[in-house]
Image 1: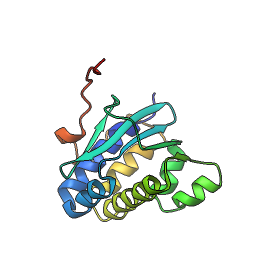
Image 2: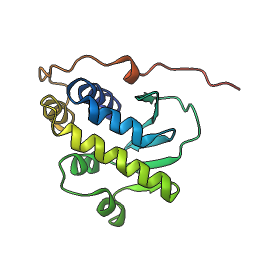
Image 3: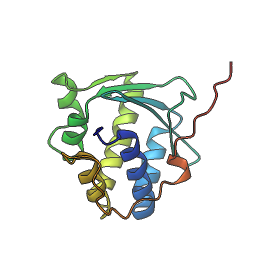
Image 4: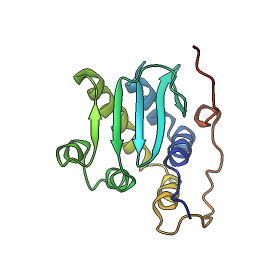
Length: 160
């Protein structure tokens, strides 16, 4: 059975954050500003950006990323569970992060807003447990089945 999707987890957790703690969701969008972030978790790629107070997640590159992040599902778990900081993960070689200093600071602010907000959302714990469970594929009954349109992946063609 395939591992649970990071992309799905990210979309669902952003929808939960928007529903349950909108000020934290807005803080994520505000701190990202006009930046685009390319995220690779194991073999999944996703692009995250913000505009108009909304966080957008896409499988298609819309604009050149300001920040590039590459890590593993296990390291995402350590960050989400608060067992390791972003800085520690980088220093230990568990996470690669590239960008200008100002872009990395903004990304760190957006990540902290996301993490601090997410742990305060009642349904985030269920999403986290579902994503990190050892035997993927079993339904957990998590109530956050809705994926807001801002977070749904719709393949787009790139302008040539």
